[in-house]
Amino acid sequence: MLRPYSFPLVASLTLVALLLAACGDSDAQLDASEPWDLVWISDSMGGGVAQPWADQIEEAEGVEVRVHDHTTGLLSLVQIREWLSEDAELRDEVADAEIIAVYGNPLDTGVPADAGTCVSTSTTPREPPNVYTSADFAPYGDVLRDIYDVVFELRAGQPTVTRAFDEFNGMLADWREAGIADECTATWEATAGALREAADEYGVAMASFYDAFNGVDHDEDAREKGYVASDGRHASPEGVLAQVEVLHDLGYDPVIP
Image (cartoon, rainbow, N blue to C red; front, side, top):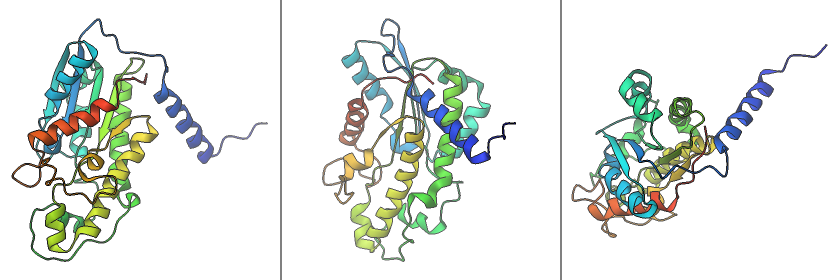
């Protein structure tokens, strides 16, 4: 008599099946004979990116791109998960979208309370947060996994370009003056790492705005590059173009969920 699979084995088989589904058909291509729909869901750190990205796609791929821009200030991944569960119009948009990009902040995912001191342009010296790793932000990544489950269900069997992205840091100079740069950099890297781990599991390519703005070691001042707006936090017009370039460089090879 065969023994039933143990839970760890079942979980492993499920993950393998999910990864194979995410990889899809390597020969799959989006149909350029029809317009593409781009659903962009982001907090303000992705503000202003959707339309210039669509313009870049149209120029490079020779296809009309219809933009559904859901940029919303202070938008969290938890809120996005709720929208995708409850908002029938958004679900329909995602079901019909060839290109889908999702980013939200980690609020309401059990973020360590002291990490909030980094989300500020204040130069006032203050206690730094603890040094965190992506494991400390695992619940943040889990919410993104829940979102991908819904996206892949809605797009089942259809070639789809899905993109994740992380948050650049416009506040490095402020952190340095406040004496919290090393610890806050670790926090930023931890949140980006949690998102990347989730994206990798689903075969989703991740655009690292953090690397583009702050260098691969995350020690470059994005303000000195002209990428940060006068508020010291959000992207300038030049920064938006840099974000578009990162997204465009990932190409448009789809997966089939």
